[in-house]
Image 1: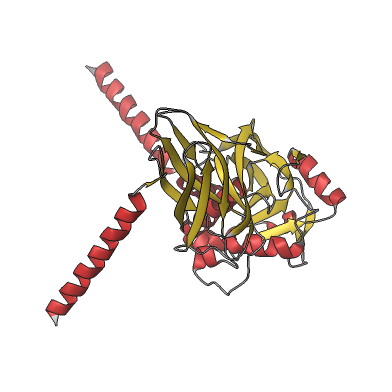
Image 2: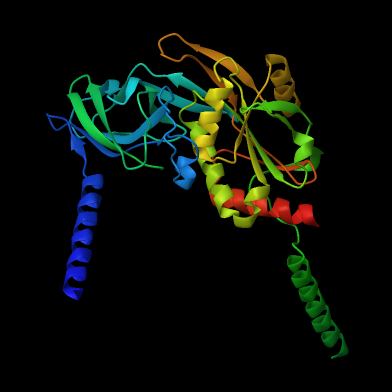
Length: 165
Length: 202
């Protein structure tokens, strides 16, 4: 009996280990020049579900969310992120927030330059990928498929976990 | 010898005074931006997303956090609302007296239904406030909230709304003593909110 419990615990531990490894593993473009890591999507679900875990199935489709990540260009030439798409939203737009004397502005960005050897961070209150027109609720733990199109590295597909920061 | 003794007493007295002061709360240093001198929060009535009138002066006894935003805002507004929800949870028993009101800066698109879903998605106790363009403009003006529509022809959103990202906290007596910046940590917001409760009770 105790043996079984220990085995169960070990199994859970192993699973948790797998999860952690998967989360920290970067996704790379086919040519290996672009590396995506630390990606996450903000949850968007109905009626206090985010704070109390009491989802009542209220549909949040049509609302928006945002995706964040770190993009690293390990190659020797500059690249650009041209656009992003997802199966979870009607459109995905590249946006940047600016804070000018306390006034928050959000503007669209045509493309994001990723210089050779540089890192670009998409993070809250800064550069983000806005998921416009969600097709369904995004609950913590869900996975959202994102497709990022780079000028040189081509398309990079990333599976991003929904989590609260 | 006598002089030395007196100096020792003086030091002891000053220490005791210092301890007393800090025990009494002393001068608390706000983590957010202090409003000096504290100002009376301009009163207003707007409509909640479930159709009830909501008047600021009827919230006496509570700490009210007013935040201006819009539901098409995917980044700063959710970050702030999510932080305020965490603050509310950390306040424990005081959470019932912590009223978070989200005032729309985009009444055109923020229908009551949309506001209700959005705001309650973060915390069922939060209220979404809207009104006519005229009612809202008065509130923006009274609080010095800058609201500007910005066209985004290449975006599915068509436009966004630039707005002041501050959180206006109103103490239990209806005064504004401190404003929160959206980039403040949850712990700092909790600390200031507890202080507002403590001073409000005194």
